[in-house]
Length: 445
Image 1: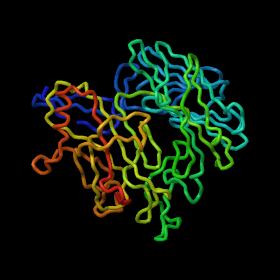
Image 2: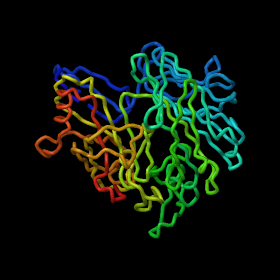
Image 3: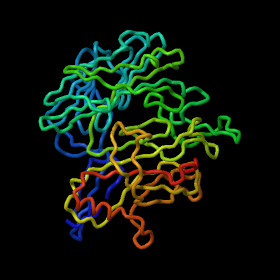
Image 4: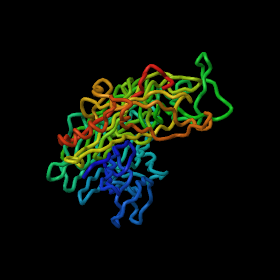
């Protein structure tokens, strides 16, 4: 975004805002929905690095994240510690935990209960946790009826939120850490005939009769579905799990019908909430009811089904993405130009398709679902592109940035810059955009 006191709005994950001076006396400000840089102990900025390392004190720590993140190295110390500017949130497991197996950003505590593993994964601004219940016998353990995690906030007041999560606020009432409600899901959709595309190393190619058939050479993945431990996919049974917050504990009660149901397919995943906070927000919402609040990695837009021999999902659904940016840093500025960038990693065909960027009528939160999604209020711009198939196209079409900015004199309905200028002048607190396929009935888009 170019301002007169230049400010680019983009969907790349960077530290939330940077300002650069231009030779003509204007400034360029980059605002981002999610962080990509964090301040190191020495005060310098460095790219986000969620890789876990074992420290000399025995704890497992993420290399460089927006909040200092520590996982237990085993024993009865705090399971998770989040620190930010002297404020600290500690969460503890009910019993001592084994020494974790560390792989990249994930620490796995095998056998916290019989045939139950606990996986903790570091994120740029927090972490995720998931209990992997491997068998029906393991699900009968009384310890899973209600999971109680101790909580201690130093300089923080922990309280429940209306959507079933919690927020930890400082003495001024400002949120420091927050969490949506938990969730759980089984593996009913992860059978051989309905495996999520993103969970396999090679995407299935299907015949015209849509029967899955293996190919001799690997093909690009549509990645329409999450990996089994990341979230519910098509065909999985799922349930939301609101938290109960007390003075000293967070309690999550799994749905007994799903935990011990005759039709439950194991492994079963119980996901206590994600902890963390960022200045911007983002989510992906699917018409099958799945939501990916502040997701990590890539998500798609459009119709997820089968097209041109590629499988996205055997249970088709439509997906949209939403990005929300705080605007206090541009209040009072004169906006000269604005661009929003998203990165297209893959598409089903080499033929270009249209994608729409729109301003939406209301903001998003961790409780926003497909049924409560905000409606598009104003089209900011559209682009006709196809990136990500590389040498499968001629000429090659590698993954690339899709840039939404006003085509002055060509498309008068594109008004991203005037919209940001008005928001800056009126000191609006935030702005929210939707990113959608223009034709959501076309699986090729």
